[in-house]
Length: 416
Image (cartoon, rainbow, N blue to C red; front, top):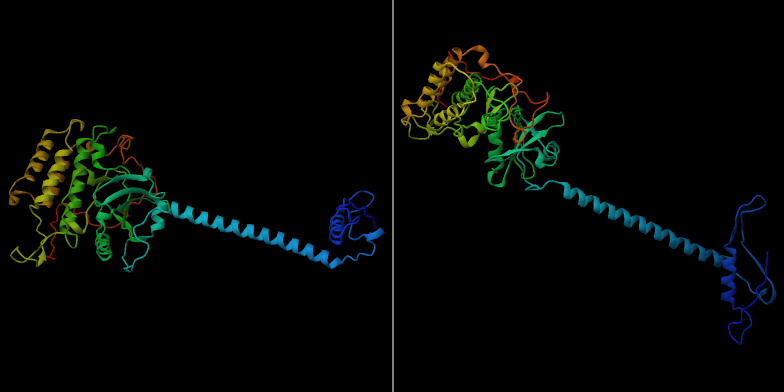
């Protein structure tokens, strides 16, 4: 294709284009592309034959290729740089979001002590965060001296209660695992069962079976929608007494609860009482053969001052005007037992085994229908912090074989 240029006079001394201008014009024209039509194309104007005063100019096609290559390299490099920069920014944003969503932990590295504890499961911190939706406030059941208690759902849909220790309640790792080992040996139908624990990243958490009917206090408070008959309250008192008796006489070493109250008596789906909130801090004191030195742990818990006084307080708290009708003999014997537990002199207080037996005898003279739980009873108001009803997948401790300490047999236990 021929190309004839008509110069624009740039200055009075020149009436033609210089070489660089001819080169530029030719490059612009050769970059055109004719669109595809039904008759011809597409064609690229790759070359021109110069006419007139420019016919003697020699245009090196390699120079044009070099310019195009440089331009292509610049464009490619710019695109690659943009992609790399975008990927880096996205990676940083993702890491920041993960760090923000991660719940705060108290330690990121520690010299972890390995200890195999039979019967309980060791959970990771990640499992606990997933179970509680990152410890969301909507899953919080309550708060005690140990820390906050959360309702959690494990990966197998088991519903549990997770007690997360606060800074002031943290123990040394060895002491914490020792307590877990002790709690793993406690199996009784009237004790809240330990499912597992978490000891990661400076966290110490205890995982217990979930009690769908909350605490005894939930049922006794004024705002409770449901009510318990006197016979049902006797069953709850008996169950808690059996759990305490197990801690005194069959736990190794024996444990004194020291904080028996309505909030520490939990109720399962059948309103069976289960004692909660016990641990190493409540181990029975050591005594020597004369009862003055640290030789062995006494199992003679008759007249234990704190336990029986608190048990008496619990017994008094379950009596109110909403418990329906009851035989006068039963209420009289029940109150007499509670008063005996409050005697100032320890030797006049009944042993826990006597408390269990007397409660069983009182229940025997109660009408049978009055001691049966009615599933239609509503536990407590919706505003209660414990109003998280369980599903059929909740952990059931009755599958664990343990002592029931039914009356009629006095346990014979050698001093420990």
